[in-house]
Length: 133
Image (cartoon, rainbow, N blue to C red; front, top):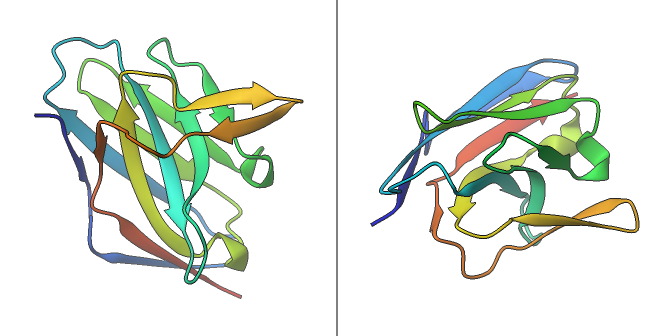
């Protein structure tokens, strides 16, 4: 069984606008490194949306609104996924979830990343990130 455990999952991470946070997520249950990982977020009364994804080789994709501010990375040896968030804005306030699947989580269409969110192998438990102005 694939499982994802977010560091600080279920907790609240608060920061002022312009601040920095790093989220991490540990995967277990995969028998190889050949799986895809990513971060999603869901703001109150909004649908869950993809934020960043990374393939097994470490190639990332980002939604337009976080490009240049967020960095997704992974440590395959430790099965850990990271999301470094800088220059945070109030509109980044949401619950952040890590996710994984044996298929790609994103594709680039017309120069913009499009993320899939249905039928994935696993989801983390979520971390609430609040950014105050």
